[in-house]
Length: 51
Image 1: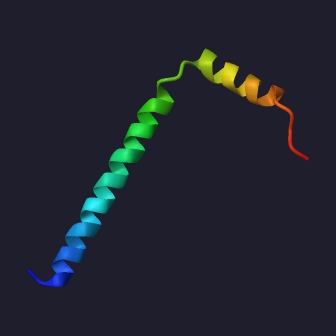
Image 2: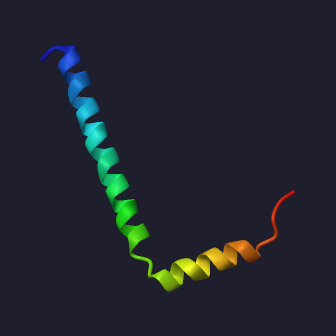
């Protein structure tokens, strides 16, 4: 194979790997219940804000 075919193959593998990471994080984010999200937002709001 020529070198540019290897570069193309590596870029495709990189895109697929990135998609897998994004899909995994999205599944973890959607696993929260609405009560958990509300509790996290309230906890973040109660923290002191940097000036």
